[in-house]
Image (cartoon, rainbow, N blue to C red; front, side):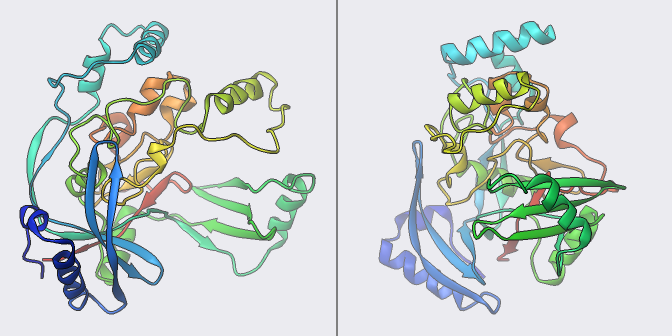
Length: 346
């Protein structure tokens, strides 16, 4: 369907790119429409990307060809003072003798070349395994009375009900409530459902290329991350507030005004316009049923392993077996698992 390489795309003018991308839209399944060519930049990486719409969901064109993947641990990477201090604290706490560079090499995939066919990828992933309740049931009202009666905060409450099922209640911005029930599902079932609609999950290599967008740095935005908070905190003030909340045994209230973000590259779209690997608690499904990408399920954060190793789980090539390998037969964990659609173009 698409006969264009990354090299040829780079040589085209903006007008020619738009013409080609619009022509592709006419060959896509019903419902797809071409939006525009958008310039996407993060760190030192920048690309002009073709965006498409499908019923309100945005997809971007990722061109195929021979691509470099993995992290080269022999490149001239130097840890910042705060990264070194964070690593020292982690190493002392867990009795680790390896250096910070050795740890990065042990938890990332090695450099390699992969030949990828062009594909469209959904820019935002969604949680899998949840179904919206048609109406507010009595058990939902009980949760609302218990957890939301004396609060106006926009938040969610998840009640685990055994056998891998859960009930999630959310207060929306319009001050209404929604309820979702999780259901036991497997990778095979989810992948089969996608296949019936012409989609699939990205392969691990496709995911990694879409995540890094061609950057050879440790993270898609560069080589470093702020080691005064975990990725789940928007600022050092929020990180300190979380510590104080733990020390207070959960009695400390969150400030009504919240916290002002001072660094959010991991939550911004990358140089392909894709929102990816932003929350270590979320494991993203790929086509390979025995693995996930994009986080560790929050293990480093929950264990208080240290800020640097908490950020490392969002590295483009991050792949630690105990966190990223899974039994394909095991049910998907609701609340911790996300997935996005890919449309192959050949």
